[in-house]
Amino acid sequence: MSETDAAAAVNDDAAAIVAALTLSRTTIAVAESLTGGLLCSALVDVPGASAVLRGGVVAYDTAVKHTVLGVDAEVLAAHGPVHPDVAMQMAVGVRSALAVEGTPAEIGISTTGAAGPDPQDGAAPGTVYVGVAIGADVRSHALELSGDRAAIRAETVRVALRILRDSL
Image (cartoon, rainbow, N blue to C red; front, side, top):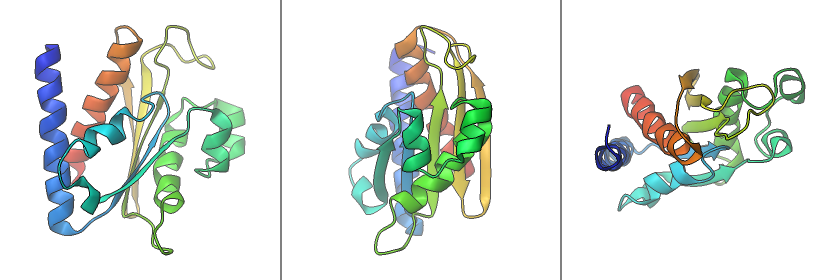
């Protein structure tokens, strides 16, 4: 996929997500590690996103995944931050972390992985997990991406939006 096509796919998916969430009056919260705010930014780029987007947490430091998002410290110690359970717990935790007046967001989405150029805690660059929590349905999606650091981060955002769009 060309860079132009990828950018168009991101814009289209983000717009479709915001439209669907607006129609259903559903809120979303975003937790990011390797994408560093790019996923939340893609949603913010859509006019009207403020009606559904609670915000985002960039939990780049592993300890923040535990202290802010509630990822189990034992899971982090046993597996490191690049793990499907971490992605799922981040997606669940961000809903509560960004609660408004005690009401959590209905949807949480998360990204965690190794963007490179070096492995992270034994995970090869391009190893990524996207967590999606919609109500009681919590899932992790494993990605094996290639390219440089920027390409892996951009592709993570593109795929995460597609996963979310397909989940709605």
